[in-house]
Amino acid sequence: MKMKAVRFHGQKDIRLEEVEEPECGRGQIKIKPAFCGICGTDLHEYLGGANLIPKDTPHPITNETLPLALGHEFSGTVEEVGDEVQGFKAGDRVCVQPTIYDGECLSCRRGLVNCCDKNGFVGLSGWGGGMSEHIVLPQDSVKKLPDNISLEVGALVEPLAVAWHALSISPYKPGDRVLVLGGGPIGLAVVQVLKARGCDTIIVSEISPRRRQYAKEFGAHHVIDPTKDDVVAEVTKLTHGEGVEIAFDAAGVQVGVDSAMLAIKARGTLVNIAVWEKRATLNINQLVFRERAYIGTACYELGDFELVIDAISTGKLTPEAMITRKIRLDEVEEKGFNALINDKDNHVKILVDIGASISQ
Ligand SMILES: [Zn+2]
Image (cartoon, rainbow, N blue to C red):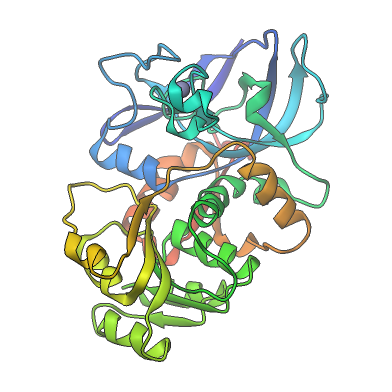
């Protein structure tokens, strides 16, 4: 049996193709993807890749190299469950935690599967992707959606989990004032999670006016234009001369880190979420003499998806407005990737509607 899938072949080369439909094995679940988000990581691969996607050396766990199916932010419906699968049945609505890990390395043995030595992602490292008509995954990757979460919103759980995790491993506590660098999808997810977790001073620094507007709509209390305003001076003013307790870097640019470091008070923390394109410089003495901390955060750990799903289900997170366009599988490159590259200010999340019929 053949099915359609969007696959990455190399830099600026993604194709909608007919590929072999996967079969459901023991301990596995076969899913019919419904909606799949296009992520900044996908764009990086498209523009400058292959980076994360294995090109010459197969991924150590999946043993696959490109061409590989894309899509790691997705929801869908269970089509079939393999032997020994418990708790799922055909028709269940689900989303997918795309982490691939070996379960054996020191990090995995400590439960830190997101820090696995061989880590990978469904939709980037193999095992198929969400931009395809069918996918088969281990039961552990599949998370049930409650009835009150739509399949569209189910595709947003992944980026929200990135933000949720960043907050969880930071020292954030209610009452803290927070600076967020960058108002792209992850920065906006951080804003929403901060709001859901009681933050009453959220300051966002973002160069695009449209994205500053989105930040306000999602709950930012103050927005700063770093091309016009002095970020450190503005943050200092907004915090009555004290500085913020925490900053989250969802931008990954040197000038952002330089100003965030000075906008954080003594013993404050700068949390990096961004994946950097090049090496950055830290002024270590700015850490030393103010006892500031700088920490990295990688995706999400086991349990984060469940917490985000619960927060959406109980109304603490209402992320629907992140969806700015829905497209078909045959429109992924033009109306998806190219829109996010050329018209990024007007988009937050573009979802591929896998079930939408493709015009011939
Ligand atoms: Zn591992």
